[in-house]
Image 1: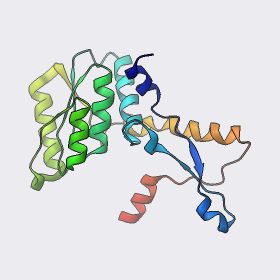
Image 2: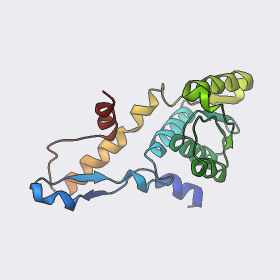
Image 3: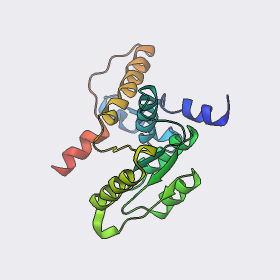
Length: 186
């Protein structure tokens, strides 16, 4: 197995750890360590799943340019997975940190920075314009509007269930970060 295959295979299957600091509540709480994916983000799951599904459907062809807009984690994940599978990647971010920009470039991605004042909408608009200009040589991943995004996390749920079955335990409740973020915004 070469390094690219190894890294791609390491996406997902992240461990569960018990949060001992909350043991005084007599409630056992476990966390899925998605930060152990190659780029440090759960977004690795999204792009691995999406790219492989689109390849299987014949939508993606070798040498195409994959485009998306991101403020960081998604851009790094797209670039890592895309580069390892032989695609050119372009990320059009708004508000990208220098650390994320460096990570994306290190993974072989091309950054085209949009104006900060235009925000995510400006980055999205630029991504759409670039895809139209490149035509069939490119594909806009559209992470925020793609049904492949939530679909990608089905494997995470399967991993959690399997891990608890192997420990001969039942899950009483499940809380997901995105659900917590939605509550904090409301």
